[in-house]
Amino acid sequence: MRVMVLVPADTQSEAGVMPSQQLISKMMKFNEDLVKAGVMLDGHGLTPTSKAKRVRFSGAQRTVIDGPFAESKELVAGYWIWQVRSIEEAVEWLKRAPFDGGVEVTLRPIFEPEDFGKELTPELRGQEQRLRVEIERQKRS
Image (cartoon, rainbow, N blue to C red; front, side, top):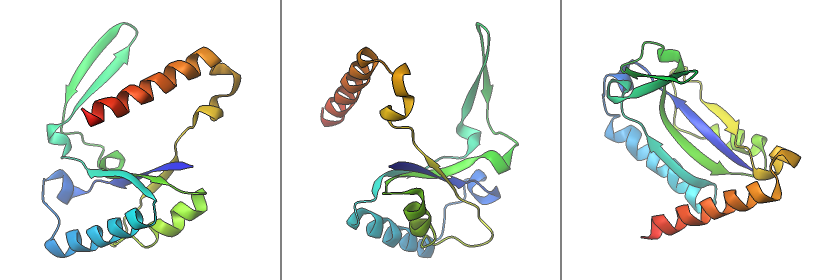
């Protein structure tokens, strides 16, 4: 199973304050452990919401909203995508992360094609697979 690990933003990350060299070093070691174990598929930090935009959908209307965004408890500062056998395994990995200070990190399983059942018809499955192949091709270009 794949899971997305959502690291929350805080006042420091929203202000654009970079983590200390010590924390970066600890995080790189943790990432190294994840990669060596074949768990980490992707992961990045995100810029502050002052550089972000949101698009609100209401019927046919699209409204663009410029950051920053006030709902700091709902903001994401970074993420990982992990490949694990279970959500419990993901929790065990996350417990090893170098976080402190009351941070609450969210783990969310990613839907796999089989999760959609009969609604994902063979034609739609084929289309989804072609898109994945094209994405991989573009990465190599």
